[in-house]
Image 1: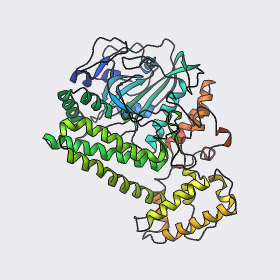
Image 2: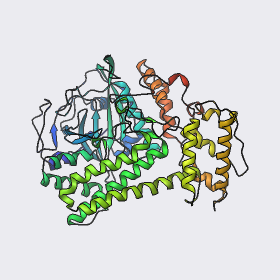
Image 3: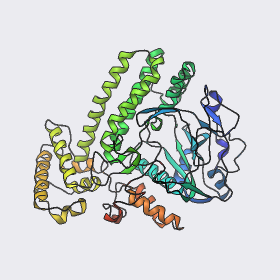
Length: 515
């Protein structure tokens, strides 16, 4: 890997704290603090993303590169740092936050001029660690490494993962926050993104009334990541906010398409580029449930439940609008833009559902059809992914639902009453398909790249983590192949509903923010 190509334009552009002091503290009037990673004497490679390394310009992995992946004995050209940001957490202003478990190496530019930031997660404490140690355990690192890559191959905007490495030390964590701390194996992930800038970076500067620095950060972000914005003056920042709103809405629709639940949509976990960022207590849906949240910290209110994500994104955009107001200075524009988010989101949402069902266009009556479908999914506890896979097998001839045909899609027992409701829906579905202008073959061609066959379910992650703890990587390698081909059934046994034995397993059915 050619780490000599890594540059640090961010720390050259903006004011920072260059003391290198890891003491946890407020760092007003700066956007970052330089900090040295902890350094790990006995790292061991678990996984390396060779394709990503080549894509971003790092090149091939060599044994000597393990030190870089573990943030140990770094080259002299790399000056590591953590950024400061703020945020609203579970709806409450939390003040200064920052990269408490992440340390940036800088960015690399590939042969075509595309820039990618590199960041370690779990490499030690920073001034923003908030009384924590900045380390990461194996289970959370495996979850980040695999899920970020799974989302990429599902065509959902996301940060990505370059490597997964044992640190060689144990880390103490209370996984479920129930007073039962345990030693766990430590690990570090190198993750990548075009940029890790968040809503919270702008919230921090606005809250501190650092308006000149706020404008400089906005200009930097627009220049580097929003080349389509060519306006000037206040219009530039209006267009900036509008594009962030659209990217955010598009991301929410993609989450709903594949059944992803983030679990902790605080404003400091929202990317201004519309990327999925910070994989903590997330989950893919098994049975369809708009009220499902995988995060024990989100109970009982379920603020970040699956069906709330689009609305919460809008709430988060309100907070970003407040932060950018000193630059935009147009209350009416921001109000209209935020109200317009709902129209944009629901239009994109309905287009997405049409593709999932194989409808060529949205028609009158489809809203009622979608509502009836949601009710059926809830009542029969149908698996979200498997249900749509099964719909692809339905042709133009009337199909009768049977226990044999739908039992593997259902998390409840299909009695005659439930089968009757399912058959009623299938009849309505085929009647709606008959209104398509396109053929059923064309309809199915629309469905296939929209409805995944394989999703990275929590129970699979749980099994994979257990195996890696035992020194095995067979399932890790198998899951990697499966997640790289999510619209195919490479391994039919992995394209199945959650086994009943995992319903109440800690770290599988429910997770905490340390997951």
